[in-house]
Image 1 (cartoon, rainbow, N blue to C red):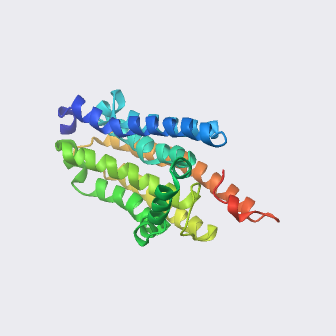
Image 2 (cartoon, rainbow, N blue to C red):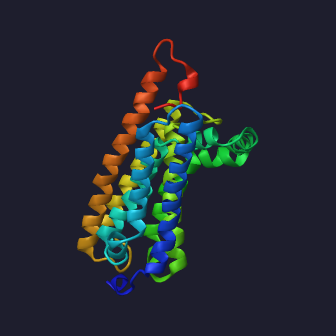
Image 3 (spheres, one colour):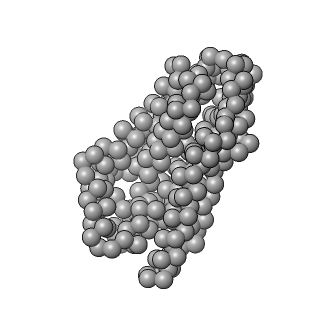
Length: 262
């Protein structure tokens, strides 16, 4: 129970929440500009972005973040919000497409050049993204990293940053909501998704029996069940969206230029 004796300072909470607040403000400003200069940006995408940032901010700031620092069940609730639900909602908001609409031609070409780069190909490929995402969780919970993040402000921030970024890259690598310049097939992405789901499920069962050091068994059991069943709900949403896009792409007369729309 020694994790409960270390409180999470308000300062680090503000620092960790600030990027999500800034992201929400910048997205809203881009929407206003885009609506004035071009056709109206879909309201549902804006709602997805704001909801995603709200979920992420709730995981690192406020009562949930404070309780998560000393209780494994709340920690796992924060993991689901920050690493799974928030990335899914924010991917559905199509921020890259909005960014390209608001930039001038020169800057848009530079962003496109980054998206076409070899480095971005590696980061956006489903396999490396899955390794970063699920592999990072195995590293967190089966080594002393979980204890370190409760003792060190640096590791606390680093782990949360990784959980969000890895979750976003993994979700984006599967759904292709934003413009994609390095494509793999639906079958390939589906296979990677199934492998990631299995690894995530196995980890949750492992934690049920062998929790991280310092986590009481009753918290580990409840937290691992939340990880297993809560993760399944979010993964089911990803599966539905992926299958819907796959089905639509196979329809006669499908326009490949609309492949990134949702």
